[in-house]
Image 1: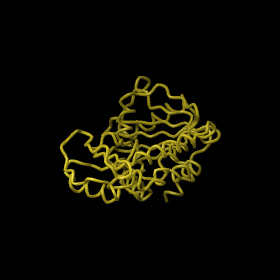
Image 2: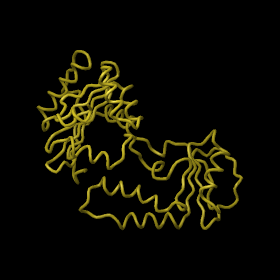
Image 3: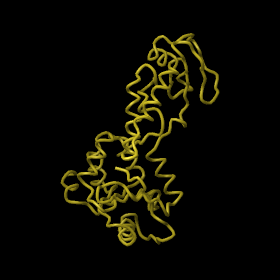
Image 4: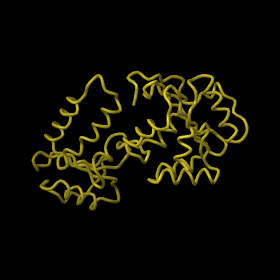
Length: 268
């Protein structure tokens, strides 16, 4: 779904940072205890912030139970515990690297990289939660990768753009523009450019101005999604996306314009 060479230009630093804050979560920001062992013998046992921790484990005979025990012993200062068997980690990265092909989309490769973590249930362990949802840089969109792919296929016309605008009051807090080529691969990634915009009025009026700007500079805007920061957080967090979107629209906290007929029908 991601083009091999997407255009990334004229990105506003504040909008980009705010959108990342809303959509992404990095394991590096989490307080975590790392245990590295080799066939049960502990080689490393440390907190990511070098805090003093309770170490009532001398060997790793059951990685799942070890991770749970260490977490419960240190829950006040820990977001998750990671237990790694050194040789398993080496095998995992070797397999990930060997699976790469130049012909596939980058997002396909990254998705497979996280999915492969499930193949090492005792070699790469986190608690609470599975390794594939704790480690690395996670997209917090509240939907499976396959569901996002299907949504693009159903609702986004080829050679068009989708624009997201997040408002804090009547201030455009974050934005994201995604352009899709003839094969529905993302070939443009950018934000609104404040230097080219003089937004006026309330956020609903500003939404119209943003769509006009997109249509002048990029391929036709097929879907424009505009919402408050509060509603954006609520929608992203909830698994019942369509229900929360419908509620936000009825409440006047979310505007979708343009709105393709097929998407309007899906939203009811």
